Image (cartoon, rainbow, N blue to C red; front, side, top):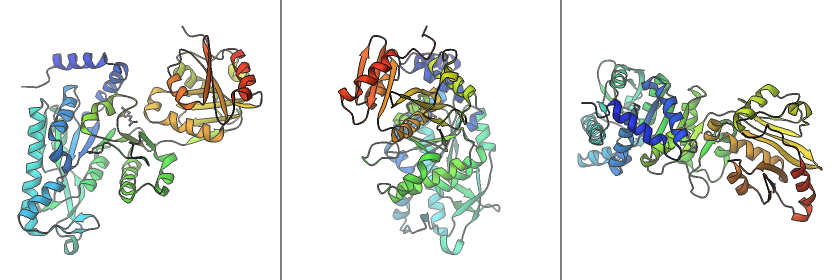
Length: 441
Ligand code: ARG
């Protein structure tokens, strides 16, 4: 019967919890399991991934049911359709990126997508997962422009009965992009358009794109870890190195996120990295959120000190010493709208001194810490700060600094274009500062 009886699920969750990132994995499992399962995630799989990495894909999707999660999967079948249509002697013609679909192509599209659907469902089952084949019955569509595009449909209504019934049975619903008009004519729906309509109807917590590349690439061809649309979108759309394909992708993702609650996010990753992307803060792939703006202040007046205090207490696991906020003279503060990440500078012997850099764990996963850090160092090309030797963020600080001195419990860091003799004085002053947080336990 069930391929994941409760005992097995428990064992796997236990095993996961003891991995290096066990605490994070537990947190995410808890968070994802708390959502209505048809709203946990919509996962889009391109036809190329089914063709090139079926086993990896099936294993990644089966793993989710093993831990009790049932995503809704939408797949395309581009390469499969190209091959099948060519074999049938039907030329592939595209207008505005849409596959022109003449009547003669419909049976081939139906059979090919149904075949791709069943191939994926079988592979998931063979990998020990639970999947329900839903090659059609979800997308009701209207024909967009029959003269120009033929039988290309645009979703007009989403029927969620099959999706809900699969989720209740603990199965991942596997959907193909086949639509039907109200009077039962089969139509071809572009996969991005289908995903958009489904996401609108389900309002999922995660939208995941499984691709071969495993993320959006930066200038150097490395995967961009996170994008905060509120602060990064305009810049990316203008950047020279962002090509047309990536621009379209970003616009499409912005469109998806604008239609979702702020807590939802999009991840692009490859099948083999799906678990790491979903269950760790750092992830493996590109995480995109609608995000939040960063508020900049040059005095305490416009800051909510109670919220800052709560942030510091939670981020460091201990509160600021009594009177800290009263005594504070802010030079600059960079705070995200939600008060989940902040950097506060003061002046020390005239230098910009980073007095607090506090980031909540989940905000770190979203890349908010990095966004705040970037704003900070743009503001202060020369910066001094210190941290306790036990601070888990020190690895990041050593990467970011241009120099550091460690003495007993403290390390003082500096960054910017300055020599050791120039900073010697302020480094001493920083070492001599009294602690600003209660002592660690
Ligand atoms: N596990 C979290 C999520 O899926 C955070 C992922 C972070 N990923 C990244 N590429 N920065 O929502």
